[in-house]
Length: 313
Image 1 (cartoon, rainbow, N blue to C red):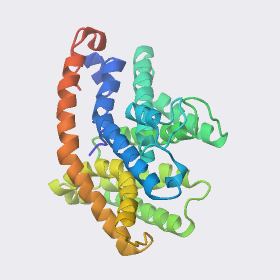
Image 2: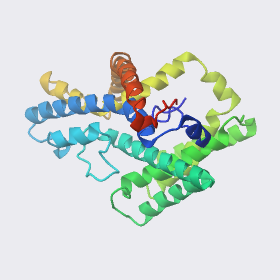
Image 3: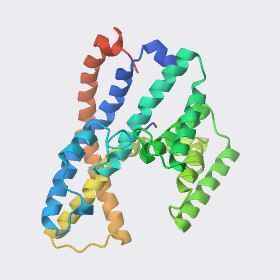
Image 4: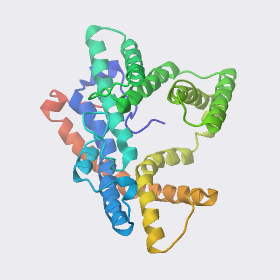
């Protein structure tokens, strides 16, 4: 499975064959991700308005932000040039992901024109991301949010290229499984401490991906249920923060007293998030994707975007 924004990312040869333009490439990713983000931003701000009316203290000190809705809906909430207004804040990741996709396109085209191995440029972005984080640089496109995207995105990209078409051997899978288990135990014992982002990005998550490429894992996850469940995960991610505010509103209106540290309350919230994600996927995301695909086909056929030829992904 591929995260929606990748769809899986085209190779340099595919770019050359399809005559990709930057507008075509970035519009495809934005059209896939942003419609649901925009709707969720409006709903989130509506719930925030209700919460701030019901409770004496604003939710996390936040107030309703129309400007925040605009830049969140455009996918530039954080990592680009604007300060994050915390509108449905988990979607900051979508902004950084779109930024990384844009950088990926530009580097791939540059490598193609200069006949230079693109992998070296991807590796340079990993080092750049680490440098931004270590030296605490905070500039447009070079800031704490974008740097996390740079070293994680391009590490995943290089790993995907290394694993493409290869069957992971059993002994490698066992080692990867043990690495993931050790990482989880370490995180459970010490939590988020200095160096944890690097541990997760360069060791634990790559080991998990390698583990999922073993023959045993592929047999387990080949069933359609896992594909659908994976598709729902994007909607759960987009809506879970808004759902959290909604729960507090219900607690106030219905005079509930829920302890979110209670394991059963946590499990109930997870079940509610999955249910909301499922409704969102079938009622909102799929129809929006169909509509966006039709609109995109018309836009891509325009000469300025396609260079006179429709690009096929």
